[in-house]
Amino acid sequence: MTASLHILTLDPTHEKPERCQVCWANQPAFIYEWRPLGLGESKTMRGFCCPECAIELVRDMRASEIHEWAGEEGAVNAEVPDFMGPHDHKVSAFAATE
Ligand SMILES: [Zn+2]
Image: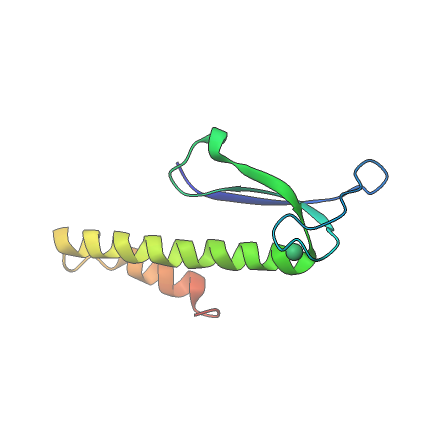
């Protein structure tokens, strides 16, 4: 099971949440659905978030993915020391952000 993060627009004519449910400070602009790696649909967290927290959720997912890939790279390299596929993919995907 992979991790997922969905950021959806908020229709203020139908939903009028008062506060972001991540920082509890700002007015929300989006709906988020976050499911961490390895957890099923029942563990999906849903709520309203502000633009700043939407960006933080993506950053959190990026950090989680980097951590996960580092673990996979170590496991693959232990089995096949010359196999660089996961490492090359990680470097390419996160080169601009690491
Ligand atoms: Zn917020």
